[in-house]
Image (tube, rainbow, N blue to C red; front, top):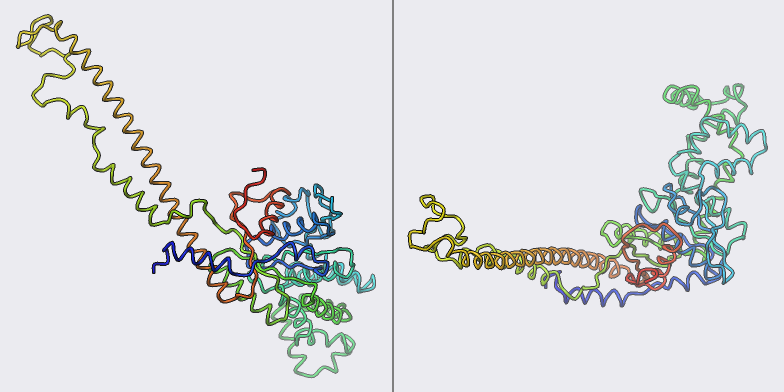
Length: 472
């Protein structure tokens, strides 16, 4: 059976309906749900999904904060806030009839790192750390720092116990798994041999202590000094010495945050587009969550295409388009109607141009005067007008056929897209039947206000991608 066969498409739709449907409202309204983490590969709509979930939960009575790590600042724009920063800000325009609130914030990676230093070191040591060049580079762009600080901020928000629900928009990383690995990666860095080497001189008393270092240690620091530069190595050693008392705190908080992600009150939502690469990474992420004992709530299948005329298959649409186009190739009536209605040996049909040999007023060779031809000339003009009208009508009909054929071909392309998305979804649900799924339609434009977010939330909650537009 052809993969484009309508029967196959109907069977795919039946299997999708048979898959578990994610009950978003039940998840958001459950008081035991304290953290929702939206994760997935880049560009699949995590930020919009997180904002829509936060708005829907707030309008259903919960006090919600949405934490985004999106550098495009779309969340602030859609919520009517001039800007977001490291402090939660209340969103205006939310329906608070049920007693809920919505707050939003954007992770400031460096500021979060600074807050950790300031809260875990005395003022003098904190000032030394914050002014250290190596720290400034580390806090601004070290690999994994953004992901680690996102989890650190999540831990801070949860520890305050001020919010009923925290919705997290994970960083736009190359891999959706980076933020899970970040705490361990930073912990490994802090526990690594390089850090121990750099910390050793400070632990044994600076220059005096260097006498007690073995030859191998001295050679290693000498090599590092040549490779990295003496001043850079000194900055790193100063940073490590100042941070020594805090390293244990970093590891402890990383472990606590990881356990928080595994707790029953946390729910992961994997966001993906109905495309092969996005769903392949989503499947990998589902497997990783299961391996790490982290609670998966379900899959949000975003930007799903649909059609209100899906009963017309791609094959029938293409066949109809070809029939319309081929009929115009053999149908030449409009362009040659006047030629076929006039015999080849008849006089000039216009009758208004005398023979070059005849003088004005002279009779034609057949003895007919020009005046006698005037009525015939009038009749021929009427015929020409009718022929012109017929030609115009035929041209309009041809244009309509061309337009209809073009629309039919566009519909066929849409049906091919729907079939491709259906096959991709079927593969995912066949491999992961335990994962509940909800769908959101591909919308014609970006979401830029609360009304748009509210509409997305309604689509998320119903699991139906095709809903009337707001106000329709």
